[in-house]
Image 1 (cartoon, rainbow, N blue to C red):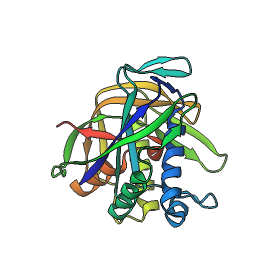
Image 2 (cartoon, rainbow, N blue to C red):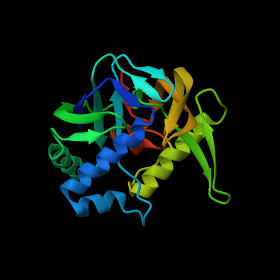
Image 3 (cartoon, rainbow, N blue to C red):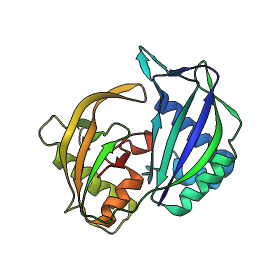
Length: 240
């Protein structure tokens, strides 16, 4: 199992608060530049396509100032993983095609200067301790009135709602595995407000214990937890 570590050089140390929107735009541009067929497979607007990838960003010395994120240096790092190995390799080629091209970033620009493959240790246990690398968003969607309820580690129903999110993800991805043995326990969690395409939603960060079959946990390790995974949420690292 692997993930990509992408290093971006910036013109200045200021990022837009809506960084998720910029990163998704970059991913789409990379896919379309690489192959229109690959782009349509992932981003065809006429279809509701659930993604098997997730990412998180490391923002050195980040300070949030209104609509701007100020960094301690003019670069940031993105970690990208995908449960579909063929798709993962296609993204490698797509990223290669974007190297050393300045991509606009709201008064700044981001230039992909390095792509490295990092090995992830396969999970072999039924219980793991994880630390969220990006905010975990847990949501119950009511299809009848198109309303959403967001849960955090501090609200009742959090674990059950996340289990439902995992089950829906597996079903829509066509992965023949049950989420019945999945569970989450808060070790040291905290509620935060996460920007999602310029809209603030309740989310959670911190340390959690995940339980489930090793196969399921490995899937979630690569694909992320909760919703809005492909927009930079729900990625975790295993710490125990």
